[in-house]
Image (cartoon, rainbow, N blue to C red; front, side, top):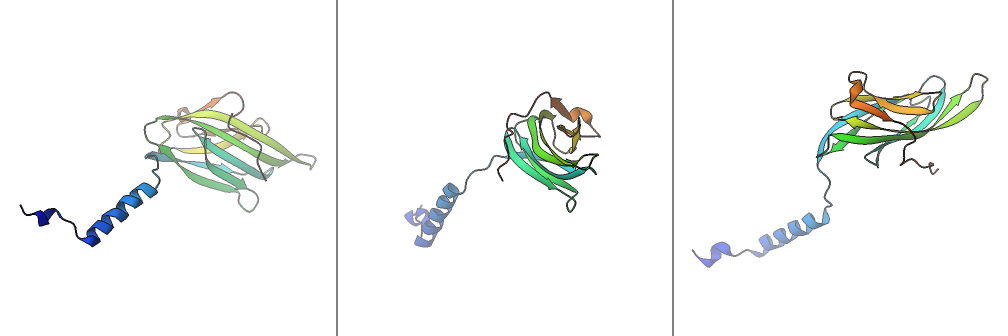
Length: 158
């Protein structure tokens, strides 16, 4: 074999250097296994709602609902290598009471999602807009509610 078969031309060397630098500069992202969707819908007595969804302790989406935006559906990717995921819902829901007053409720709850990929969850409220949780009406066993407040929730910054 001749030596020339192993030598690089200057343009080839520059191209390889650029590719090497690009590989170092581009941050690595975790591999994603799949995704699921969540829909939140404003109830008739709600004036507005701002809520956040955390998956495995990380903020993954936010809902801002009012009369102009009555519902929203989001896609949430799941990381590779896990079947069960923790979720937390946090937010503030402002309702109109029977006597016409505006009343804001802070909601915070957590749960577990069992193999959520491909599922569609609804974000539902209960207990006078004080409890907030996810449910898949087609597969209720896919989401499990945990008692107490969500640990990752904090007061919103406006």
